[in-house]
Length: 458
Image (tube, rainbow, N blue to C red; front, top):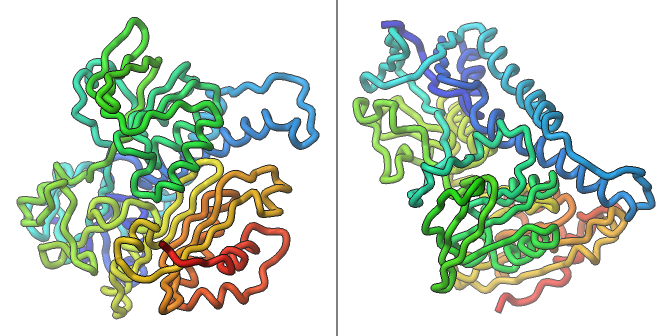
């Protein structure tokens, strides 16, 4: 039995950073990775998909060149093998960097294989058993295979297997109209595919306000993407060389046929083969590891970080999990998950930046609130760049003047939202931002204008 001060299972966004902090503190660390270093973000999530988004945007902008007075004397085409090669290169740089940094880290031993608990403080990997007083689980998640009749017979892509695609599907059908599904929808439509999106909920990205959802739907439909909301898929089957998807909408059975199918309906944690039950580590009914506000599991000396704990499904929340754990065990500073303000982005074009509560959530609290909006077509910077789709919205507490939430759908919305996020962490009133003098011409300069238009939320 090989003893260590700490064992880290998985190398997503929390694990490697924690390994470096622990090693810098003089502790011996074992890091276990069963597949690709860097986790979802580096290999099948943020890095590769945003690289594809960039290629898709380049193709889209090239087709719009005439709008800017630029003549391109040939038809725009997409070389998917070159697109994939670029994506693999960018993703590979990140993955190799993570692997190299861990294998060269003094005080850290890397094990490549599948880890299973054989006791509360011991983990088996291959033929070895490792033991430590502190164990950190950072195993991430994977796509859910929905229980749809016929799905296993027709063959389908997930967000992971889409990374191997080096061709343009003639007609891509996507099951699921949320973040993953919509990003792939616009990517492949801009590459040249026909795209259909089927969503069970009454509107796209169901967690968002309906005005945001409808605006995104209009943008995607404007690019020729077919959207079917309020549609329950009841079966899939081969139809010649195509895949036919049957769905029920308002009691009427319909069908759409395409060449390829992508499922983007949900994700589950990679916790089902870790031997958690042997260690006594509790999980909920969806397989997420139960943790407290400091990410401690039900077993003393064991923490769960990242997607597997159900407390956040983003790279930035996983990294923040590392910061919380490191602060508590190494810096003698109390940090907790409940201090985190929800913030995320949808990387369609234009992107959606989101922070805090939605309008629907604010209404649910019953508190008096104010709302302000500005359409992107009013923003000079958006006109100059020829990107006027979308709008901005902010919600504030009427009594305290604290910002409750904001939605930025439009040019640079994924960046501009951070000016709101910073103010919320400072717990400062919206009047601070209203008095700020912003640079012209920018999108941000319209935030004070939006705040000046605040009205009662009816």
